[in-house]
Every structure is written in C-alpha cells, then in structure tokens.
Image 1: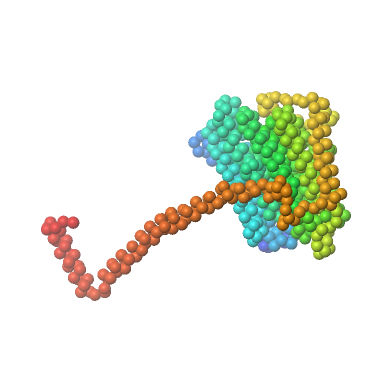
Image 2: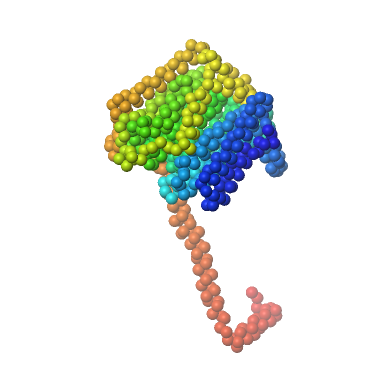
Length: 634
C-alpha cells in the first residue's frame, strides 16, 4: 500500500488541473464525472490504507524526497498515515465524494460549473495534504491551502458584493489564527531542532513547562481561527454566502475540523501543558453556549446550521481541553456525517423552494419532499443527542469527561445540549410542519431533488444513525472500538492524564439527564411551533431584549467594527491623507516639479546657434586655463 499512498492527494489535484483547464471545453457531465470519480478512487485507496493500519497496528510512513535542508532544519516531503489520519482520510474522501455527487445536481445550471468542481477538487487535495503530512510544515501548507479554497468557494458568486465581502472576511480572520500557528511552528523548531512529528513528540519529555505552554497557546490560536472559536468565529456564519455544497464541505469534511485534528495530532504537547488545556476547555465551552444562544432565534435555515457548527466545534474543544481526545475525535466523526447531511438537506429544501432560505416562508414541506424530510429528521435527532443515533454517544462521552474534570463544565455543557435540541427541532418544525407560508409560485415549484442529491442524503442519514455504534460504552454492553483503534495515538497522553472512571450509576444518571433535557426541549419546540403554530417575528417587529440580542448575534460584528475596523480605517485615513499625500507624495512631487522646472531653464541654452556654441567652447577653454594657472579656485 505504501507505494500508492501518494496517489490519495494527487488524484484530487489531477481533478483540479483537468477541470480547471477544461472548464470551458468539457461538458458538465464529464466535469462532474471526473471530479467525483477521482475523489471516489482516493476514498478507495484511503479505505485500503485504513484496513492496513487496522490489521497491522502500525502506521504507514512514506518518505517521498528531501524537500530542503538548511542548517539544522531538514524537511522531508513525507506522509504519515496512522490511526488518526486514516480516519480523517475516510471522512475527507468519503463525505467529500458524496458532496461532489450532490453538487452535480445542485450546481447543474450554474455557469461556473467547471470552475466550481475544480475548486472542490483543490479543497480536498489541500485537506488531504494537511492530515497526511508527517511534519508541521506540510500540515501548514495544507492549512493555508484550505484557507485559500474557502476564500474561492465562499466568494464563488463574487458578483454579489456581500458574498465577496464574506469571502474576504473568512480569509482575513483566518490569517490572524494562521499567524499564531506559524509562530508556534517557529518556536517548535527553536525548542526541538525539528518540525517532524516523530522527533518533536519523542523529545517533549525533556522540555520545560514555559516553552510548551507558549507553543501550545500559539498552536491553539491557529485552531481558534480555523475552527471558528471565540473570538474568531464570526467568519463561519458569513461563509453561508457560498453555494450549499461548499457549506457542507467546510463544516463537515474539511477546514473547520483542521484545528481539532492539529490539537489531536499534537496531543502529547498539550497534555504536557495543562494550563493550555484549561484554556481550551473554557474557550470551547463558552463558544458552544454562546453560539447555541445565537442559533435560537435565527430565521435563515443555513444560519441556524452555521451557528450549530460553531457550537458543536466548541464541544469538540471542550473534549480536547478535559483530555477526552478520543471523545472529541469521535464527535468529529459523527458530526461529519450528520452536519453534512443537514447542510445538504438544507440545500435540497432551498432547491425545492426556488432559492428561499427564510424558514418563516416555508412550512408544510414534509409531504412534498419526503426523502429530504426523513433524512434531515435523522440528522436532527443525531445532533440533538437522542439515542441510539450517533450524536448521542459522542456528545455524551465528552459530557461525561467534562463532569469528571469539573461538574460546572458538565452543567453548562448539558444546558447547551438542551438548547441544541430546541433550535434544531425548531428548524424542523418551521420548515416541514404546519401550513405552507410561501408564495403560490413557490408552492407550485416545490419538488423533490434529483437522485444525484437524494442518494447522498440517504447514505449520510444511514451513517448518522449507525456511526455511534463504534463508541457504545461498556455500561451499555458495548466495546468502544474507536477508543481501542486510536489508543496508539493517545497512549502517552492517557498514561499522563490517568483514568477518570465514573461509577456505573453516575454514568447512567448523566446520560439520563442529557437525553431527558433533549426530549423536553424537543417537546417544548413542538408545543411552540406546531401546536400553537407560533412564528418568529418579522424583522420590522419588536423583540424582547434577550431575543433581540440573540437575533443580532449579540452585536459581535458591530463591536468588532467599532473597536477594530473603524479605528484602523481612521488610522489608515490619517496616514493616507496626511503622511502619504501631504508628506511623502508632496515631497516626491515637489522634487519632480523642481527637476522639471530646472530642465526647462537649462534647455534654453540649446539655441541651435553655432556661433553661440563656439563662444561657449572658447569661454570654457579660457576658464580651464585660468583654473590651471591657479588664477581662481572653485
């Protein structure tokens, strides 16, 4: 298998080149076939690599060539496929293929069809590079690559200024986090004389606490930007400006999981820096609760899911912060399935509604688009944490670890889980129950999506329902297969952190509380939006203070504008108008004018009169003679 590993990222890159060059000459059918097939082949190779790692228990190390060597720094272009990256490969290529297949139908009428598939292929390539690299530099290349692709895809419909602004916002905010990540890599090399995972992790025991805390904090800054945590989360909801398949790709299979993967990959560094882990847990928990509060009142179906992603990522960071590395990664896996399902389902709803995204103008769709309804219901139950669907097992594993670490963390986390259940079922009830609230033209247009869109929904719904079974806890008669599979990656951290075993009765109680609250929230949402048929108020109507704060996203963007953007604009205006125009420009312009005026005067000496030229020559010779006789000096 080792000889074919390099093909896994190369095939999507080939798709980018073929579809990019042939975007105006190849037919849409050929472009969709090539773009999807190459990712599918990558999935097949990833599956083969996964089973080899599973059967042998050993990682696949492939050194392609020495990239460069300067002084102490020697960087090999090499790949590492171990238990952690093997699962990520399956998520990226598997879910990525389903999104490609879905895009064939969703983007069929778009003029930029070929360019869109080229960008999708490039996105998958860079994400594969990110997780397959055996050192931090290759990871960083993939890290920056997915940032570039997010910019290209979020702003795909760039003729709309708001979409272009959303793309720029994502790009700029990610640069803030990327700077932290880059500084962290510099400090890693300064501390360990290497940026290779094997070397760095083997030398970590001999490093003092202070450098490790600084390294991990800088790496975490990178994760905060890429995985949309407080305070750098506002780009992700705005990323909904891109086509819906892009939203699914960013939120489920690529990009936002990069920060989780990076910390999980560097788990021993973070385990040796408990102060940083506490910061991660607090930031993650705060983000989860904050985003959930915002999602409660949103009326755009994609915005609800966007803030849901921010909240779920917060849960993953909470798991990482309390040392539940397997639990956090388990939630990455289950979230990839149900969040891709929900976003693609939302895209199917929008497709059926002729582009409408406001849930206040939907309703009564469950009998009109049955496949979309059933599959989205599966995804909603999964994310709400209701057994036996996948989200229940992964979320409760994180909550149990949070309880063992700090019961306060658990309390906030379980309340956030209740909010998740409420706003997700609110979305379902407003979209699929009740009477249709759109226009007559929209109602006439409503129809189920084509097979290229519904088949991925069905596959993802099945995965969302059953994926949690790999993590059934022992108290429920199961064997946590994922924990056993990932144990070689997290073994050293597990020994240092120790086991925080909870009693059987405590575990059952915690599960009962979380499920009970989720069911209560579901029932409350049903009573409010189905039984009483209440609707979110129109934008022009008044809301309560708390509802208004939630609906306007607690004015975070406005606060950033006031504290950061406007002062920077004023400062740049000062430098432009005063320093640049009146200072630097004026000086340069005056020098140019002086030179111009001097040359105008000097050119008058060029009269074209030969007698004048002879006179000047004689005068010059006389002056030279007088100077040589020292009759005058200069």
